[in-house]
Image 1 (cartoon, rainbow, N blue to C red):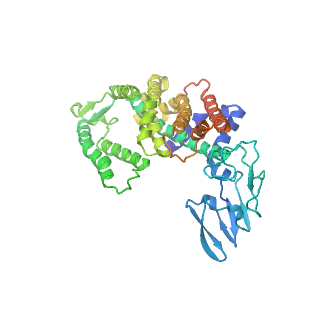
Image 2 (spheres, rainbow, N blue to C red):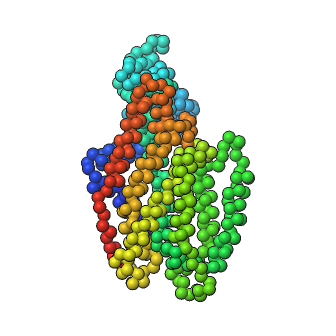
Length: 435
């Protein structure tokens, strides 16, 4: 529980919103609120409806069809095709923006400006058009297919923050773990059992075959589908677990082993040379290549951005660990005989994470901007996925549709400026933790 509490405190310390100006807190909270409650804010289906005494929540049903009661009989209604306003209900509650990001308005299509007159069909003569009510107006205009731009902005905020935060979470975990190993153990402190190391190297080939090659050749999937990204991520974790399983890692109990059975691994040199080799490939080219050959999805993009952004965090953590190891409170911890685990988790990591948080916040901003750029190029996500980048790409096709460039661009700019402002932290002095 102490480790979980310490991790949660480290996450809260990353943003330090209490130290930020009031407008930063309000804008950041507004973005987070929009991302969390996007289905409540913009949705074509009713949030809640009562029909023949039965309660329904069509907006939150994952199925494409909604089962409702009609004259005592259950009928299946297609969510995307039904006109919810035409269904006679005892009560229905719609979202503030009664549109989906991908739903089409067949009357107000072909780039309707926010200031143009908007129409809807009259109920009695269907051929006549009447002005659209203020409640159902497209306040930020429409796209070529009649999709509501404001609904697209709301759901794009959810998508961008999800990709930015989760990709940097993966990058932070990888970077902190690798940087901690390199900075704490250096080239002389990491000693492993010789038998465990040899056994681990022997397991590399069979573990790689049965985890990466064998399942893909035996899974029955349609030709148009590939293995999901999260399944590939789980395979990587399983592979690492099998390779690490033989290690006894008797770092704290090395006195029981004779020097002949222990090998010193220069982990710092290995990691430093590996990072140099990894960063020698331009990251943007690597991201575009991996996104082009992988299955288009938000999860694939999260994994690609996460596994390509850990190097800068690992370098910062390594540098902070090397600096903090020479401070007075670490000398006291070593003299008291604290384990390596306690030194890292309770003393080094809490002090290092405060400096690393600047890189994490900049990484979130970079991931959001990269996702927008890939979406603008049509890479990484499904073609019908609405995002800030895809909306700006649609505006490129029609230069007169200025609202498709201005509003997504303003949303991206405000978010990036706000994250950069949060990352601009004041000075920090490492504090000694109770031993």
